[in-house]
Length: 250
Image (tube, rainbow, N blue to C red; front, top):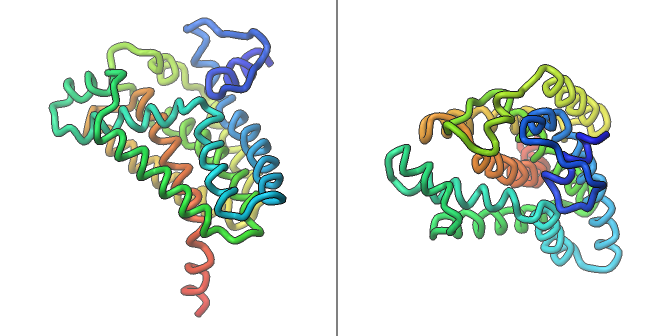
């Protein structure tokens, strides 16, 4: 339970009992990342349902986009900005890593954040009313599961750093928890979860190849970017399903 609280405290702004793990114990938090996503999914579902009682769908969608980022203290958005400041700088690998470590945000980082938030908002407004709360449940779960999968299949690109312990401490329990949660969601949510599993798994693998090509592996920033991009991809996939079904069965 202590490590679950520590994972919640690490990935979110939710106040938890004092349960801060030592740096050497941080790797043990990885199996709990998908469970944190499940918790955030339940909260998001409840918040979305409440908002739809009061506001039109477009307003609720905008507020949910704010909620997705705010509940993590914009932690993952910061990683997205740092990643694209580095990746799109057209500099050598070592310089990219330096840029990603710089706390200042550049034009590419701003562009990445604005683009991502616009995509999330527009895709959420395109989701029909019935699966809207379900989508808001799935989004945080997808993001944290994709982070875990990225850690499992990637290598760390730096010599040191806060996220290094995650890549050095991966265990089979992380994969077991991730697989069990995915199978449970597929059973509970049906074809939506199954499609998302395929699409997001492919994305994480492609993202790993892209990071390998750019900087020779993953970092904490690329994990944050992976979370944000996979959330956007989940919403886009759910928004596209009705048209795709129409094309398949036309």
